[in-house]
Image (cartoon, rainbow, N blue to C red; front, top):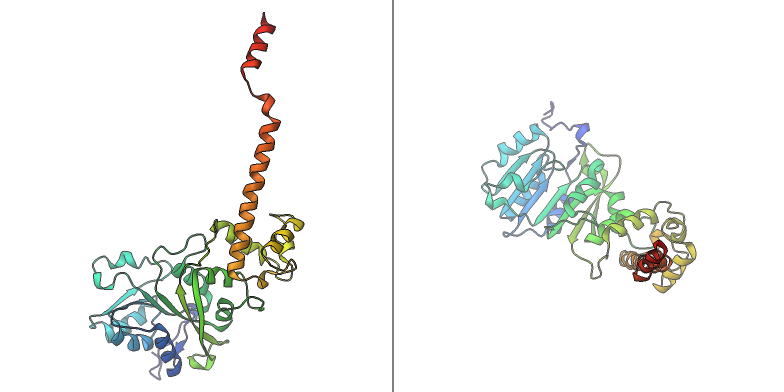
Length: 310
């Protein structure tokens, strides 16, 4: 606390206290909390969101890294039967392993979080997983307060300048919705940029990648130089002319850049390239077998050797 009774923020932890009532209300509405919900709250801070969520849910598990804030939270909410506080770094903490003796708080189905800008990516990855390794127990719903620029990239549509590799990675794993903008003035102290609330609903696409790791690879390559066309960025795995044929077969403009291709089209492209690689490898194996056919020992070879030795 400072002389004015305000809780001091720690720059090292990128702390900014949300003070906007309308923003808090938007987060709670987006979370659609009910008495059947077990909610995981990441970074409760001073507890402004905790106060709103607790009366609405069956259980609330809050994870806070700041020990001083933990003392404040325990003092205010510690006696609430549906509140449990874990002190630690969420990125390093195995939440479920900490809940062995707290059955009521296990198996959270929703997440609400005000995420520090500098660790947004790692937190989203821990919540959703990756294309190659999606979460084995996905949440029903995730509501995040994050940097506006990142939020716009997550919900971007194909053809927009904000559509990028992050867009594909997140939208492959979840439906994404932009809820509202939260101006910098809504925080104390005010950050240098605006924030936004986004809602993620984990789900599986109707058409999955046949090789998720390969999809991750071509997405990374496809956006490695955003101004270049896909047929240039993907040259390391397929010839330009061959890729043009594949793109045309998928009704994708051969001159398309990474941001012009929607998530489902990325999946189709990945599957098509993977299948083509299999066919090419099979053809190459056949050619090799044919070329090596005379190097094999068969009955006639053995007979010939015997005759020469006589």
